Amino acid sequence: MANKEIKLGNKIINANSTPYLIAEIGINHNGDIQIAKKLIDAANVTDWDAVKFQKRCPDIAVPEDQKGVMRDTPWGRMTYLDYKKHIEFEKEEYDYIDKYCKEKPIAWSASPWDMPSLEFLLQYDIPFIKIASATNDNKEILIEACKSGKPLIVSTGMSTIEEIDTTVELLEKYGNGDYILLHTNSSYPANEDEVNLRVMKTLEERYDCLVGYSGHEMNLEPSVVAAALGAKVIERHVTLSHNMWGTDQKASLEIHAMDMLQKRIISAVAAMGSPEKRIYESEVPIRKKLRGH
Image 1 (cartoon, rainbow, N blue to C red):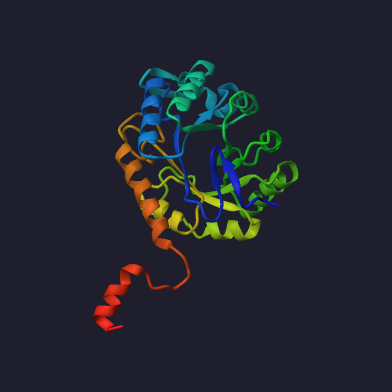
Image 2: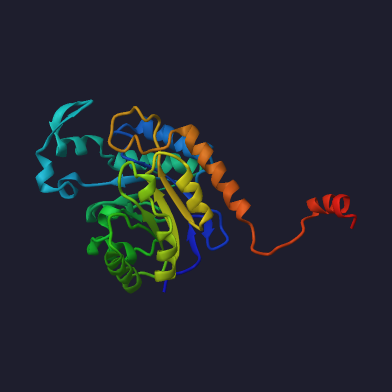
């Protein structure tokens, strides 16, 4: 059975907690550690809880039919495989990220796209493992991630409900119940009329687990509504500029939007309040003035 209280780093996630905000740097750093550093700084200063990257062994993770496809990049014309290798962070960069995040402090993690990448990430004291929508059907990754004992945050984009059933069966069989399912539309960017935030309630009721939202929309409103509807994790891609090169940049938040979203989420959750009807102290003098008692 899924746990209704999960610890992510030093933060307890449960029905009463404010959303845990994950700034998905992903591959928006374009292989430049200085860009990654600036985005870590941005997440820290705007009070997000964690930053997240993507870890791949391109020779394994890139589909065979894509490896030789030629692509024009800022670093010249090259195969898709060579492009993926060019922007991939390795141990030197992750050692730096680990040290830099501890100094802030801000949590960091990554989504492994293959088994060697999962083993690589487990060298570090990461607070959770993120399972991307692209790999939530990878039985080997799911089982080994469960066996790590780390909490799992699992995106469900591009998946039928029956496929999610299979994923959750593996999480329950091999894990300790520490998982959160994220509703996701995997289009980049996602159309608002396809975001379908009510699916979060479906996931929560069907699997009796904590739920969240990984958003790929252009604006802020769906993520704010998701928080108001009970998302306990909100994940959004982040970037220094929409004009940077890369497929994920347009569906990402620039720094000012990161700040705006964090503030709006906190405000929206506070405004939801409690189902108990009460008279607040601030209303008492108005009541006395207008009703006389």
